[in-house]
Amino acid sequence: MEYFFELLFSGLTRGSIYALIALGYTMVYGIIGLINFAHGEMYMIGAFTALIVSSVLTIYGLPLPAILVLTALAAAVWAGAYGFTVERLAYRPLRNAPRLAPLISAIGMSIFLQNYVLLAQTPDFVPFPTLIPEFAFLEPYGGIVGSSDLVILAVSTLVMAALTLLIKYTRIGKAMRATAQDQKMALLVGINVDRIISLTFVVGSALAAIGGLLIASHIGQINFAIGFLAGIKAFTAAVLGGIGSIPGAVLGSFVLGLTEAFATGYVSSDYEDVFAFSLLVLILIFRPAGLLGKAAVEKV
Amino acid sequence: MLELRAIDAAYGHIQALRQVSLRVDRGEIVTLIGANGAGKTTTLMAISGLVPPCRGEILFEGRPVGGLPPEALVRLGICQVPEGRHVFPDLTVAENLDMGAFLRRDRRQVAADREHLYNLFPVLKQRRHQPGGTLSGGEQQMLAISRALMTRPRLLLLDEPSMGLAPLMTRHLFEIIIKINKEQQRTILLVEQNANLALQVADRGYVLENGRIVMHDTAAALRRNPDIQKAYLGI
Ligand SMILES: Nc1ncnc2c1ncn2[C@@H]1O[C@H](COP(=O)(O)OP(=O)(O)O)[C@@H](O)[C@H]1O
Ligand SMILES: [Mg+2]
Image (cartoon, rainbow over all chains, first blue to last red; front, side, top):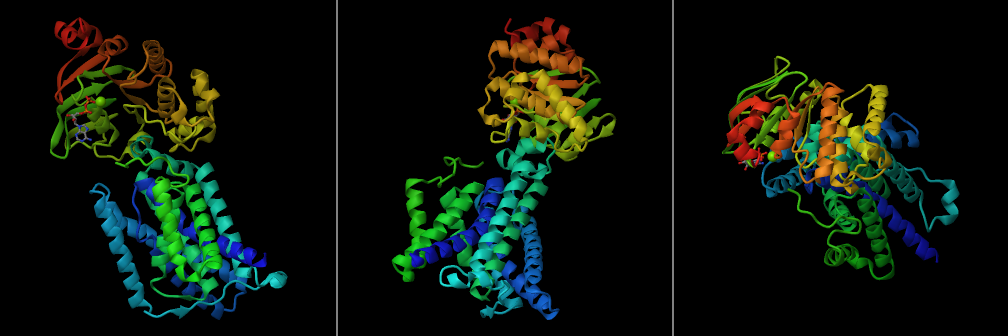
């Protein structure tokens, strides 16, 4: 039973990281119909930013919780700036081009950002400091759930709740939904669609960066390529849930995270990634629109 | 209030408007009639800034506004209800109205305007928590017009408001259009396939054929014109 709970928490932790990344995929797809292949790189850039910022803050001797909060803010803002710039440079000029063009541009951006970090930082894995304090009250449950599991769950729940409130109740959130549903009409009521699209990239990148920071602190090392697999997994989760749907991305992420945790725990850990992609294939065969997606409508 | 001077507009290589000139004065209802594909929608999209004219001038209250982004035009007081209504399907009725007020900061006045529209269209109040996409065609048209009115337009552009509506609904809708014009003093440029109806409510009319204005006159004169009767009124 203890093993079950250990796997459960491990699955929930994975799921919440996937969700933080998957939200960016699904929001961008929902609003401009683009699969942003460079999105995983925002997660990687978030982790690197966090490494640099937290190292500096540690030198100044700040307490750990303060370092965690400030680092998360810095990573979110910096990755947000990257997301904004990538959209401006690589996608906006291709807004009216054939569908394949921005997709190729996105893959190009992904390769560029990976190599840029490789050159500017290092090709090797670098150790990442533990930013999450050990909670004394968790000691008796050490084998089941660690402090970082708990913090990851709490932070991502908080962030997702904030995003939900933003999208559901604020003026900008409603404008984001309106733009996703009918861009031409959004223009006709005076919504600055370009600005809404930029904001979507900024928010999505910031969420991914927070995911990157949390997982880096959990695992303890990063390199320039970590965005690739995480990005593909989160993309899988978004498709699983129904790409374009925000609750779908969250659900798909937890389904994926739990499936991976239980399958590797009870079956075999050698095939970790195989389970994720088998699940994707099964969903695409039996529910092509994803768990919560609408019947596929070709976006024009 | 609005003046188009020799506008050309094109979609890529397809030229949709040639030398279109027209004028709408304050307080008027002006109608633009013409066959399918004549360029009526394109004319409205040019005024709204979605299909910027490649030649010619657009003046609004004496100021050149051609080439301004749609947002700026809404701020100046031009709002369009496009063909096919384009209600935001997954936003509730109330949220659709909020989007009409997107650029406004005068919260109290926004709330008052919303109440006024709920009085004008009680069915919208009943359904205010329902997604826009679940409304009937007529209700969607009322929502689309209300959403446009939430922008407080001085010039309202209506593209085929009667399309797909039952005759009774159409009559009701046109009564409301007259009311918006007379009671709220909003100037209206009305595009209609149903030329009969349009010429009954309008003060003046323009006839568009293959992207050109071929005739313009008072609505009464157009109704009596034998060519118009034959081509557009089915008499
Ligand atoms: N998005 C578009 N792309 C290419 N051509 C278009 C587009 N929209 C309209 N047209 C063309 O422009 C001309 C005018 O169309 P439109 O303004 O929609 O006419 P109307 O509203 O009078 O029916 C037509 O020949 C139509 O085929
Ligand atoms: Mg039309």
